[in-house]
Structure formats: C-alpha cells, structure tokens
Length: 124
Image 1 (tube, helix red, strand yellow):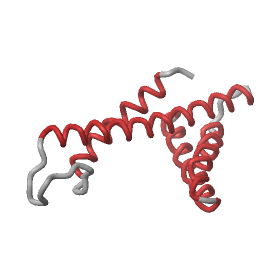
Image 2 (spheres, one colour):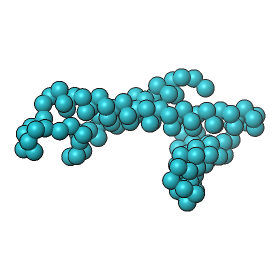
Image 3 (tube, rainbow, N blue to C red):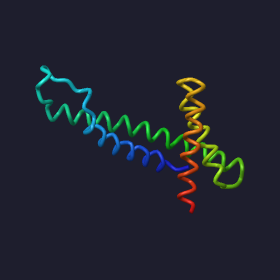
C-alpha cells in the first residue's frame, strides 16, 4: 500500500470541497450585517477550511479501504472480486458503527455494493 492512495483521496476530497463551498448557501463565514457581502479573505478562508476537511475525510476513507483490501489480499493470497466487497463491508461497517448497529449494517451493505460495482467495472 503506497501513500499515493492517501494523497489521491486528499486531492479528490479537496476538489469536491472546493466545488461544494461554491454551492453551499449556508457557509461558516459571518458578516456584521446580514445583507453585507463577505470579504474575499473570508471566502478564501472558508474554501481552505472546506477543502482541507473534505480532503482529510476522503483520504482517511481511501486509506482505510486500501489498507483493509491489502491486508485481506495478503491473508488470502489471491485477488478475486470478493476482496473489494469484503473490504467495503468492513470499512462501511466501521464507519457506520458510530451511529449504531443499524447504520453499521446499512453502511457495510452500501459500501460493499459500491466497491463491488467499481471493482467489476474496472476489471472488465
């Protein structure tokens, strides 16, 4: 597993964060009066914070998935399509566990299905 997975996830998350900051009507920057236009500095600061936050989240998820899949592949000694499915289920379950068992089950199922579709598409 190389650090490029973490960097790629961070870059992708940063790009999505940059996109969402322009689309989000409720931002964290404030002005003294409600009808006042925010300064360029405040908008740039919001962009920096949002890009870093999304980048960190995407990088962490990518790192968790790649690490789990690498460990699973090393343990099993083969690289079938099911490795991505099992890794997706593990990571989705762990991420959803903070919200409860039902969320963990839905997270595991959703992430496993998404991982399977992506792996199938990239392999064929």
